[in-house]
Image 1: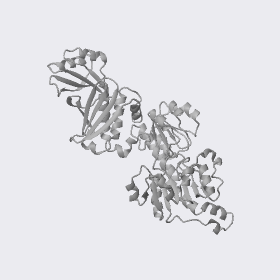
Image 2: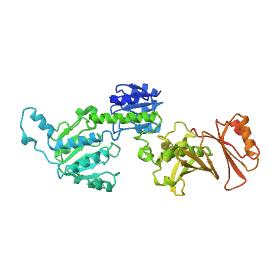
Image 3: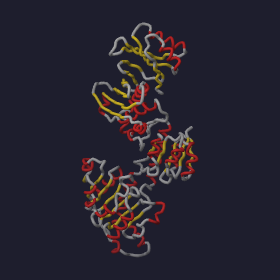
Length: 527
């Protein structure tokens, strides 16, 4: 039975979901050394933000299949190290969307109307109305950096409040932004000076770290108000503190920080009126905590039971919206890739993929992943959908894809090595009915099976009987067979035989000795 480790504080409902499929150890947050000691025995781990899954921990994770983060970000997980080792990393990108968006709006309003100070004052028995005069958000311009699901929800609420909204997101389409009633800003340099308010909704990456700094702050409209409920480190806090002192920034509302473990060192703490600060509460609602925990728990169960994760960070090509259109072809793609790679004489340099029929109308990136897995798994261990693209790139394998309309729902694969080319084509006749219809210049129609034997030979009588006799004498049962004639040379044919068991080298040596047999190749598709 699979073993799952849960650290940090995960909702009990999620624990119960995982317990239906695995043995679960629900332990407190622990440091790197302690995790390294025990991680080798687990197939999956669920964490929140407190536990750091480092490359050292991943190195000790000999059985780990999936790392699940109950939340949106994966800043606490070394995704690159996990990917290299073939470990799926998942999160819950939608579970706290509404919570984070609502907190952003709440922070903006609390800052604008001085609510925290007014609340503290009146609880002291004071009545200081004039002291807490605020500003309206109506008709002000809100600049949104990052139009993901949270940013989009913030935009819709802001528009409903009568705000003008401008958006900078290099991954968003201008027509999408304009359709929702906002204005798309193509260049960040043109963004800063437009905004009365700026809110950030991007992950922390190499590009976004320190995005708001002394230089960008100086380009902003004087008196701008800044909100960050995304990730600490996107704002240079020392630069922001200086801008608050100089009046460049009127106020800020901050939920995340550069160093949350040592919050007492933040330069923002000294601002009583100018800064509204909360302790990373963006996802801290009862509903959000349940939603993200249930989401990742279900993904862990899916992976442990052989299904795909819905929110895998390191295999974006297998997102449900992409996979749905081609999922019936994934097995076929992997089968023909495995067959073709086993026919290669030396190192593979290039893979050409051509799809036809209804496949020309869809995104075939999931099929490319399946083909890479099939190609690499023939010679390497530990290859899966996660690390196949990385390993292929490391080995210098170039992948090219194209589409054609020849009426068949087929995948044609040409593998190029230094010394030869192998062509294999497969079709899906109906749901789950796979057929290999072309191997090099031989046309056939044979079902992919775990054990296959390819025997090119001279086209003359008694060849089938002689080869079958060798297999029978070695107690190898034939479960299916087809003979195909070469399209280029009518004197040549190939036997494609499926067997119930593996064909070992001594048997192949006997078959090759038969007069008229060119060679014999055993193929194991690991179906």
